Image (cartoon, rainbow, N blue to C red; front, side, top):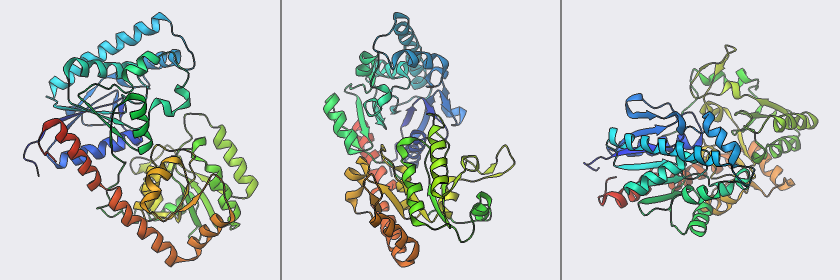
Length: 424
């Protein structure tokens, strides 16, 4: 283990809650902390300790001034001079706070989490780019989802800023992508290489078990002891393809099979949720939508009902449905491997290119259900030995390819590139 630690500054719009960026940043920080590096946090919304954090309201993508800019930059092809003026004024303010942050905590390496990737906060991306251009600051830019991967950014009036900062390609910035498709696109569009670092889980730690608190989870949400619980562990947005999960359970023609959706309806409205409920009713499928029973911590909700962790839902599930049309990586799939649950996967592009070749034993579909898929799911339900072999194979492969050990090796390369010493 290294005897020399460095002060690492994590920079992003938000480090709070259970969004993918916040969770992966926390994993990076844990690995770095284990090797005596100290992490500090800069963002517009934080749940990190105040003594190691700098909260800057304009860094948050939901700040009214940032929303005002976004509403005038996307979905149109020209912007008013006042929009440009505000972008530059806020970015100058944010740049000054970055100087303050690095001085206050004596930061030696910046880790920018998605703030140079997706233009949810244009002034922040510009501020980071200008700060690095002026200082040559050693920077690792962790890219989760690029703007060109999202239709909502395709028509815009800020192409000049997007080319400048999303991402910025200065010499002192190392780029990190989470899948090979993004790695190729970054190279093609920006002419820069990147280190591929997949999202990971701590496979060296056995998953939690059923305990006194979560033992009543099934009963609490309306699942009987003999029911077969299909868990859809995602938000309710159209790209998750949840209609396929409903069709699957409908085709099984078993009233004991119930579909549980753990997360809330997304920021695209509730029309998709209403359509899913109508579809489930039409096909005779019992759909349990329980986002008010799943939280970041155990406790009670506004109705006085017990709130469980997502891990509690995984522990009680019999089968995981993951029929997504598109995913940047596929955290829920890796979670299914970790909790030793058999999954159904729609062969989205990143699964095909990055995960499937590893040899995982999963039930796959190609955009539509077939009799073969349905019969395989039925076999998983009926054949305990078949099921056990499947989930143990996946756990072993998950540990090999998506564990903290993998992240530790990747971070060693990234830190060493900046320091010249093997610090991890």
